[in-house]
Length: 127
Image (tube, rainbow, N blue to C red):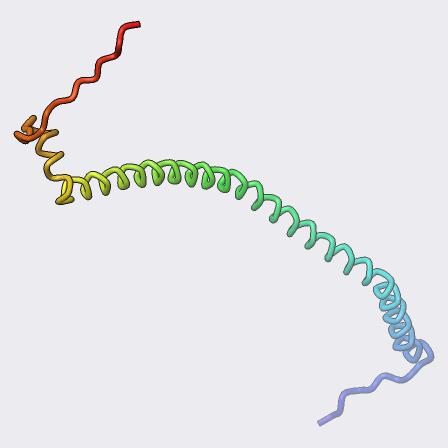
């Protein structure tokens, strides 16, 4: 087994790793100058994207909020009407089932009057 032949170290081969290192350092220095700039550009682009998304969301939410407010107003009007009808029904119910008003209801619905009641007629005197 023969080992692989080794290259002889010449001044040219000795200088190559140093130039590679130097060129890498130079590239690293150039990248170090542009890295903060790239970071700022990336942050600005992400921030502007988020701002556009939030504005778009607001643009969709504002009409929805107005529709909901209009619907709520309609529901409140219907609720007030239902409460008024409920109040009227409660007063009718308590009137119809109140023992003290039974006589008045019989008279109102049938025209029946007790024998001891006399009609009173008001007359306006002529001037």
